[in-house]
Length: 131
Image (cartoon, rainbow, N blue to C red; front, side, top):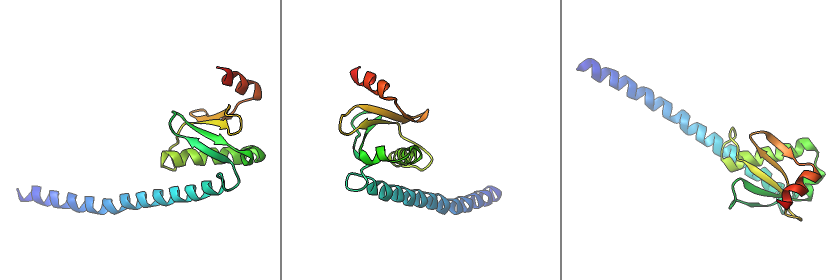
């Protein structure tokens, strides 16, 4: 009986040491999400206008893009959408599916999902808008 109690005592001490590392991971993730939010806010409606609004009523979320997004190079566009997806998922290593829409025409222009970041060609966007 004593041996079982000693083993249980050592196991409980081991679990106490693991708890702070889990809490630290949550704090790091929370800090990363705060950084994402701050960066995305600078690119938002009152910033560079990469995005104008998000519609979370639909699944996948609909992200309406502004003029700043179109002026950016492809790499910057991809980084922005990837970061926005991580922010919506609430984790830097996970992502949320997003449909990309033009804010002025409300037509689909791309998507972000399992296949990565994809912008439609203009003819595909027009065909999808008709459906």
